[in-house]
Length: 428
Ligand code: FAD
Ligand code: UDP
Image 1: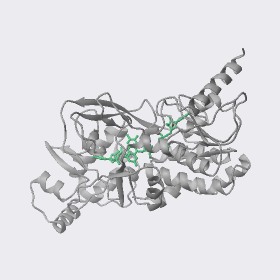
Image 2: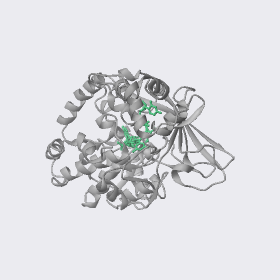
Image 3: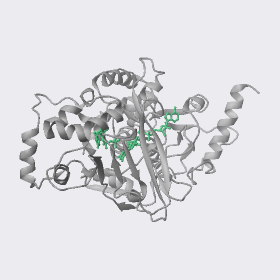
């Protein structure tokens, strides 16, 4: 048997496995069967995270035949969750809290899950105290032993803020609002640990994700919709991928099968530079090592996440039961250790990286029959809701086209202005 025939057999087995719901968390109803000849697909989707799964669902709903491939052994991408050995629901790739201002995104996902209302709270360990993050009235009063009112706090911020002519960097954002001392205590160390860069070397958008408040609002997010999928993310993804028009192939790099199966259009959600074999050099993506622990007690910390800006190799510790609402005699936590090597988790927002990403994005625009969607493929620091919003926008553009021709569908996607659509819909 030739090598190619062997690979063909393997592909056929995998497609049949997908159809039979085999494999960890493969959707039970994904029933496309491979017969003697391999099936043809309208869409090959690379990556079963939010970007890929939402597009698979939408296209299958239109009657398109979709093959979705992921090199990991599960669906869900970085949002995947599972029960650990103790029976506690955990997020293997770090805590994922759903929040959005987009009614359209929330309503779309509500077709596939019920929700548990949840408002995330974070404390930062600073100077021996656990203080609310984002910085608010309680943070400042406790830190300095003061009893300021909200207007007095605004006056205090104004008195310590450093004038910055043009806010460009992650340092500028913070020092121009709350001054050097709060910046040093809450942001500088955390950011250097997380990114291995000084905040002055990162775009303003990074620390601007975390606001500063003069009131007593202790929530991490203030979005209109804040809720967790009642039965977890993986269940949500199983329902997204449940159509008989969708086949799921896990443990598979798309490069191993792309030339062996007929398909008309590719949706690619992996790293942008990897698609082009790093032809212009590597885009920096920041990675994390996750250390998961289970403790023999009901609760370990007061809130969902405790940040450690100034001590230890980890940035934060999250306790899942706060986030998922699960009742259990034991509790599981995850420690996040930032690292340069490993799976690409975060694009690194700074001008030279944006310039390199723009070179790749220009090539992506011209790639016939391929649409690039999601956080890694657009090299954008997107939250989950922004990825869903982008995928829905891309779908609307592809929808008019059906699966006519690769080139025509690419033209449609090109016209979408897709990269910023999500930000407009789901800005925080
Ligand atoms: P991904 O989920 O990364 O999916 C891409 C998939 O493509 C992966 O499963 C990968 O295996 C697959 N793939 C790549 N290359 C190939 C290939 N060659 N062949 C086959 N498959 C391939 N967002 C929030 O809204 N709230 C949060 O609280 C939150 N917390 C986060 C915490 C951490 C630690 C991280 C890293 C991210 C967090 N996010 C959060 C962001 C969220 O994870 C992303 O917005 C979202 O998961 C991106 O979805 P995606 O489909 O674009 O990419
Ligand atoms: N940040 C910080 N101190 C904190 C929390 C956040 O300096 O206590 C900065 C840090 O640079 C971080 C960024 O703000 O990477 C964004 O924080 P967020 O919690 O949004 O990060 P994510 O959940 O995406 O990892």
